[in-house]
Image (cartoon, rainbow, N blue to C red; front, side, top):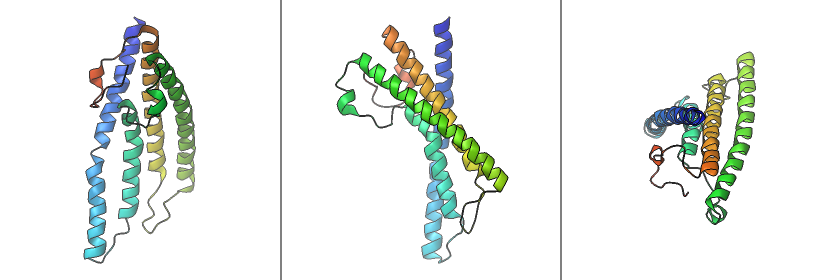
Length: 185
């Protein structure tokens, strides 16, 4: 019973993070278009835009932050392999559980700070200091959402590592990971 609930939780988080990660990837061509348009406008038409730089910063921020949980899900973040690959699978489970716990702690701090910054941005009408001067509150909402999404993915990963440490089996099938390499067990 409890194993089924845990598995469903992890599968739900996996599906949500996968959907958002893959969806946000569609912003990459938009970002490329904005940058290319600015280059064309600036160097060929000699009429630079006032909005392209700010928009490209926001798009890159959205892609990086919202894609972070998906990168975690795919195990695409940096790992210290020189030590990690030399230890037993059980010790790797413990390393992962410790690092996931620390990451959740820091991500929740980012969430708390993002909420505070969002409230400030609304109260004081914060804008980017540029000629276009777009509002900043949307960025802090995105940071709060991205941090919660990453915390959920880390909690799912922590549960999977704990399950593997206790039972020696994977909680979820390896086929859920889209990476070409499967993590070493």
